[in-house]
Length: 72
Image (cartoon, one colour):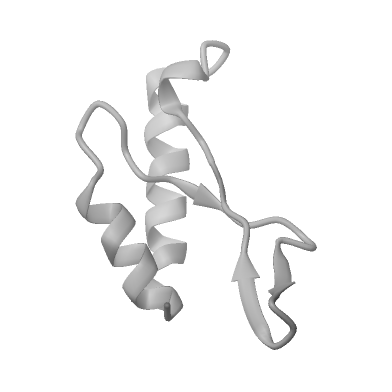
């Protein structure tokens, strides 16, 4: 599945309580069945960022959304 299609599918399932905030780290692009790339995604769950202020959490969400626009 192309990255854009996969991201759109995941974003459709998000809710305001649980936003889709993916994080890609080094070595997350892996080979799957020889010639097919596979992307391993991590995500940030704002509800678990108890040490951050609401303003910081909103800023993190905004930065991730802005970075995702490149792939959409």
